[in-house]
Length: 385
Image (cartoon, rainbow, N blue to C red):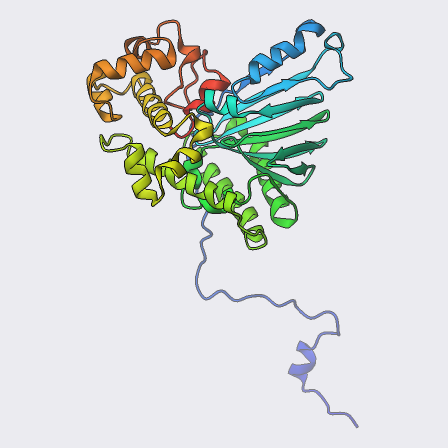
């Protein structure tokens, strides 16, 4: 016989499946912390927009060629006619430490020649993220093919040429000093196309940023740029060990050291081709070879000094006199500075300070400036200055 339950047990017994669910017994009250609320400032970015869609078809490609001239010389494919038109939309967002460009364009070929490099002080890195279509770029006889879900890195400080079919791209124009602690890593990756998980993660992150460009605040921009920088470097690290460093690539890394030394010592009266060759431990002949595409060592140093002076003069918060600014960027006198400045920009330092009627030619010192005369060229020149 089975064991008989007591009357108390029978009263408390419940059929299987009817038992009370487990209830947690709290020994003390709990308070759930609400999400931390942060006060967001107003949107910081106003894009620059360029399009040929409103122009007559025959005028469209000429307008594009003039617009992109600070970077590239472009031409139509051989089987294309000017009368067929050339549709391009080019939108630039200035994040302060880099430019994010959204571009949709018909097929064209392009070249950044040695002559273009000598005429232009723009030597940033260009990170290319194709959304559709394909681009082929040749550097030193080696052709790289960039396509969807890949990351393509190029130096605007070296000559190259190539072509693209009708396509959509995101371009990130990034100043060299953003990668000042990893110059060798990027130089050996010049004209390298990266695919795989890390590349796809960078693409996804940039797309996420792109969707929020119109709402980003000034306080958020440095954090966005820093995250983008780290992800770009992460894409390059896996391929660094696979690339045999050639003599040419070693020279490129040496050039990065030279550029950084110049940037760090613009105010020094001792900065010269001779002092630079001593710092780098190379002969003056080797140094001149390094700076051949920049128009020579002395020319490169002077351009950097003038750009730094221009940025100071154009900054409304900068109260120093022209003579003081001349000294700050390494000129021995205000007169020497003014003469060199006028030759370089076509107007005087006092004109640059007043911004009277020439703002569209000025490398803007404050990349978040929403001045209506900002231009793509001005933003490119101001990066890293």
